[in-house]
Length: 494
Image 1: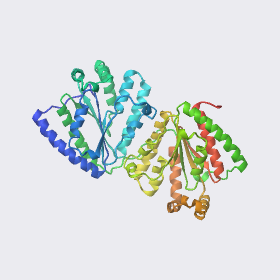
Image 2 (image 1 turned 45 degrees about the horizontal axis):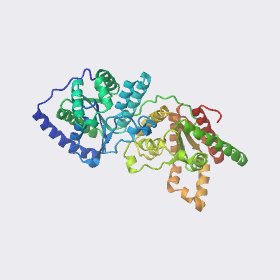
Image 3 (image 1 turned 180 degrees about the horizontal axis):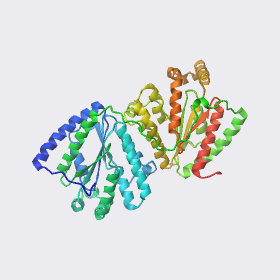
Image 4 (image 1 turned 90 degrees about the vertical axis):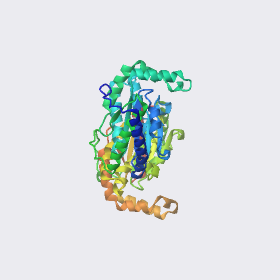
């Protein structure tokens, strides 16, 4: 794309100024239209060092209302904390709310290009990273985001001239880093890397716009015109919901809920013995997980009154409190609801060596949001594959994912609801919503069956816990967690 880039005819200075004033005013108006239509806008500025990204950005936002946009500087080497998280974590947590703009000064391209140049990313790792980037950008667009990607192009000679000017001034010398100098010294090599990256990530949903950046005002005008035109189209298409995509991950066959034997139980004596032994084992494993820096995600879903809280309590009691966190997931807050539905879970991912326990999860998209009509049918049908992709990203980053569905029958739920209703100390556990959800049991059962069939991947399978006997379910959960962590740690004894 860069080697065969055909520059547009550059207007004279007077025309550039006149057209730029028009486009700046148009962008200020479009910003309010974006706010009213609740379209989230991501604008990415990538390109050569000293290509003028910062100065163009300053011009582009000149007449915008600063309350409704933010700028994120993403270039440079990731911090130690960022390197301990999945690749997309530091970018995804930055995405804007509906109706707002987020300008990225550099993006995931910078890290990939540097990795290829230094040899850190071999061909296989590069291909995997590209697939991941295309997936994330597609997910954002499918969920209503406008993603604009600009690459600022200058020649080797022009870059050298600008770098020398920056280095000659003690007040701007700090803006030149080693990568800028490496880029210019190895311009042809970087040109090859950038060109390939642009081709590999140029998709119709999120295309690249190459900006002739020799003249900063001309570069600004190009960005403004592309951006304003795309905003007009995005607002016109607001409400269009992208269709579901085919799942590409191998699945593990799951039984229907109605076919699961719920008569399994354990005696009080066996329970106490097994609980003590498994807790001791899990406590030791937690130390190994921390030493090996393995992030662990334990996800709980299940019927109301199925015993999630008690199950989580028994697991957590065996863990070092400094190394785990329990996330009770309720209805999304307004700032969470205004973003991609997975955003609030990206924020809660564990650091390496730590354990995150989710009391309800991202699967709300294909259960409660589906049943209650909080999203469109395309949205929840598309979510099966998006969730599989999300979990695959976590696994590729080294995480262990353990997913539990806690199963009880309808009569057991009624018995537990009634006990809660009639026991003053437990009445806080029962709500009108619980009773309303019970009336939709058949709808939820159909949704859960579909969820289990479509998201029990071989890499992150579902484990169904038979919980008519809560003690049996607790022991079974602990056994599965111990087994999975032993497998992840590559050990059988500690």
